[in-house]
Length: 333
Image (cartoon, rainbow, N blue to C red):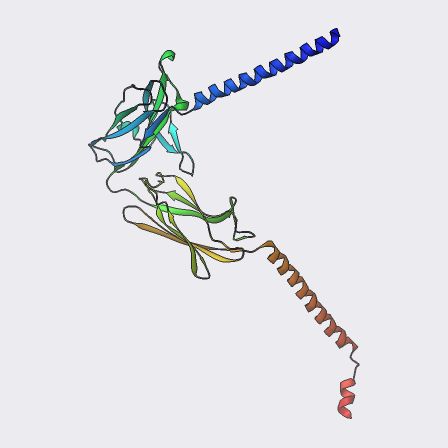
């Protein structure tokens, strides 16, 4: 009896510990979610401006507090460079460092900390001052808005920061050149010239820039079968257009639609870029051949080779069996 009571107590203790563990886990998850949830929103996310040498311009940025408490915010100016070939910028976070070229951070006037009431907004004026000797070309940077912790001596919360990107252009003579360095028809990331199924096909384009300014190629991508257009897609037409930064590379993928289970297809693309409307035109063909068709073709080829071999064997055998002198005797008679 006593042993049974001990077992019951052990079971109750284990169950209670399990319940407490589940509760603690749920409570931690709630706090973790709250800590990582977005607290700020910024608009616009990107601004494109022209800035003449010696000119000053102000960009108005709206920062919104998404929480139910007042937030202290610190604006931080950063340069950035191309982070990858999908357009992700790589921010230069060090306060005393600048981009080696195309630095917009050098043009930015200092910004003071500010507070935003609960669920309120704040209009922040970002002023850019272009030097009189600024060279023509593209300049780009970002202003990050990070919540600060008053109890931590004003330490910023980088994980909760939001950024507004600024792309500026100093007008003048500058190199504008893009090269299409890669054009593939891909399925699941692999480029081929024939495919067994029409699923998940895409045209992949990779551009490299030898320019002193950011450029936005745009145009049309079409797919033809037997000379008939079965798909036509606008390329990079959304506003604002996606850019290629100077001295960098960028890749775009265009999904291919209306592709049948068998046939030869041709993808044609025309791209335009720059102030002089320079163009790039490319075409590429590919096949869709089901595996069953390939197997039938191989079987047919094997059968054909066997038939040819059999015919040759019969001819050779017949010639060997022919009697010598038969034709001569027939001629004498």
